[in-house]
Amino acid sequence: MINKKPIGLFDSGIGGTSIWKEIHQLLPNEDTIYLADSKNAPYGEKSKDEIIHLSCKNTELLLNKNCKLIVVACNTATTNAIKELRAKYDIPFIGIEPAIKPAALHSETQKIGILATKGTLNSELFYKNVEQFQDIQIIEQIGFGLVELIENGKINTLEMEHLLSQYLTPMIQSNIDYLVLGCSHYPYLIPQIKKLFLLPSPSLILVKR
Image 1: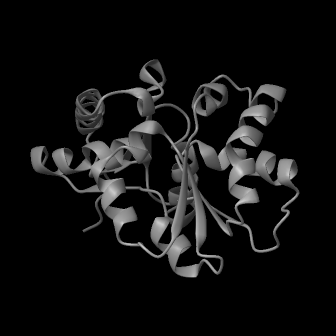
Image 2: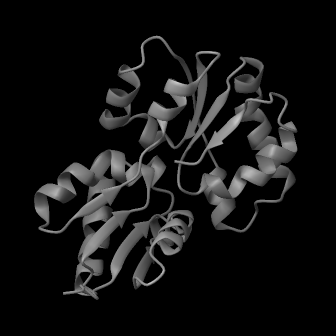
């Protein structure tokens, strides 16, 4: 029997729509409900307890909408709260997290960069993932201000260009060959990143998730 209940997704704003697009392409016949918690965005600057509280609140709203499973379409919420969500609610959860493993395994320079939120980079789950790759130099950078600019429709601005240049230039100069975008908002910056750096390294690859 086909389960016609919707798939629920939540994120701290519009970033998780990058995840929703992928789901819709793979499962075009599935109904979906997307919850954008823009009021509390960004999650990346909040404490773990706050992130768990907001994630539970989002989950309960989606459960009230009769969702059959929930996609935590936020790296920060996944790395900080998905363990608690799975323990508390009797429903499948699918999370996302920075694609450290594929970047590390395929890197030829043995150097990768990770652009993510403070909440993601400081999480226990992120630390455990990084710890597996002792032979890889991982350059971490918090994307201060990026989510706020994206949420306010200021992607193609000088302010955004300045921040991306400030955050990513040291990584490029350090000869990374993979850049991991560890926030569901950041894929919307790929055109700006490509334009800004003109892909100076032929092997530079932007890893979305």
